[in-house]
Image (tube, rainbow, N blue to C red; front, side, top):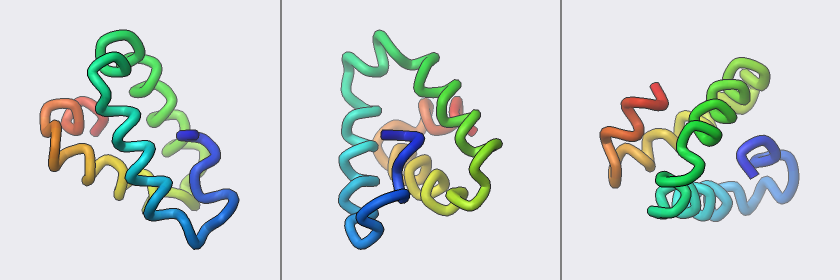
Length: 74
């Protein structure tokens, strides 16, 4: 979902961002897949700059609930 966000159904982009944020911030995801999420987000930002606003929005919405993890992403 991190890679494909914004590719299809662009009119639902805000809902997709909210859902992705919720999945990323789940306790299980942070516990078991934190490094994978960080690595994937980093690679997506570097390789898909046309989606930088989407990724910035995701990081900003993560920061509202978990500032420490948002700092790690940045």
